[in-house]
Image: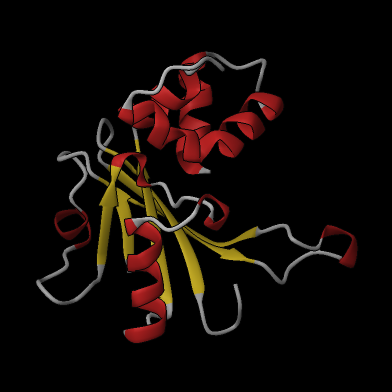
Amino acid sequence: MVIACADSRVCPSTILGFRPGEAFMIRNVANLVPPLQKGPSETNAALEFAVKTLQVENILIIGHSCCGGIQTLMSMQDNSDSSFIKTWVTNGKNAKLTTESAANHLSFDQQCRLCEKVKKELLFVHGGYYDFLNCTFEKWTLDSKGGSDEEKGRFFVKDQQLWC
């Protein structure tokens, strides 16, 4: 299963060489997966269908360079703007706050890049980042079991690869 941005410059089938039927795809602005607490969404329904019905075991979430959705999220102020895009990218608010907290010394563009990247035994979550400016694809697997007991709930990166 692939969750990717709706940006036409980032076509998972082209980037990864999938043929029709080889991967279940979800595409939306900024490749966001809304928290379940916000209620049902098309993304959550597709994710549930893929895992429960199709028995998908691997999920690859692909971010990409120059993501307009992430730039909107990172430049968003806490005001009452209720446009569709701002309402949607608010789903990434926790990622924005984490990025700003950890990287407040970096430039806006560097913070956007970090935010663009940002669990059980039968389901594996993979991350991917496509930099179409440099024509590279970075892939990694998230490991929820690594680390000590004090670090429960944290994910660790393993099997990181860079494809050029």
